[in-house]
Image (cartoon, rainbow over all chains, first blue to last red; front, side, top):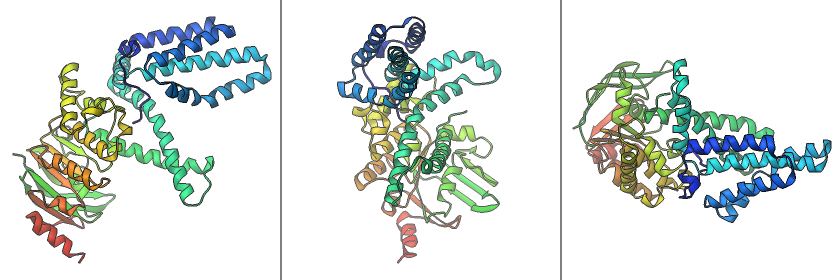
Length: 199
Length: 227
């Protein structure tokens, strides 16, 4: 399992996961409702980025993290630039990007275990439907963390295809990626069973 | 003292017989299981904690029938896989070891203390907060062992735990497992030098026990096939 969490002793790390989640929800709502001009968007983006520094990330780590979202920004920004004034397009893309960064800040400063406990706590009512909150907590945490694992699989497949003289293409990735993921899921399930996890 | 008992056990997958053990009693602390690929070693190992259920017969581990009470079987056994990547569930070293204690009655602080002790025991104390995926293969296997031994299982089953490791890491893992890491340790391995360090060796061939006894003799008999 791959984590986005960075260990640290900052205020953000020490704040309870539930409080952080509540603050995140309120922030996202406030951004959606009230942030309408470029200056406000720039301020929110600045706060989000400052949050990463406050969490103890280095300048290069923050730069890398921001760079990872280049595609997302382009996908959101380019179509809007075609259909609306550039100022409005920038504000919309900036709002979305700041929401993503704030959510990322939550993940970077929250231990997986805290996340699981939080989800288990929130999911208590589903017990009435016969679903164990523990299962739901583990499922969500593992799903979030396993997304990055797919990236590792893509690298492995790409290298294997290059080693066999093939040019890696997206359509050539699909089947091996599916097979590798299913195989990993099988192995993972066996390992979870061996560790006494009841799903 | 741990006891493993096989009584007229057969395991079939898709109608094909993959393991047949008529009678077997193991009471030694460290038990090596050797044999060629597909000889039934891993199936034998997985029977011991209920990951695989016998199609026929009974497997008793410390008096627990693993075919009917797999929950108790899993609880008393720790399983170390060849590839530690599939075994690591949580993102950081400390969280992964703590994950093994999630069902215990310990407080948060006690869980942390136990986890730190287990991490220290395998020599990873300095990496407690490190992301597990950044560890080397050897360190990951050490983490897998810490995550198993923190529960203090009566039986540790290791299925080719050194298959992906270099000589130095193999030695470190062997030292930990054959310490012994529990009342009984089952070591499934292709490393014949490692097998000889155990109290007893079981040689599997085509799903059956071909030889059992003094590790040096069993290993020598197995190795003669290839000379």
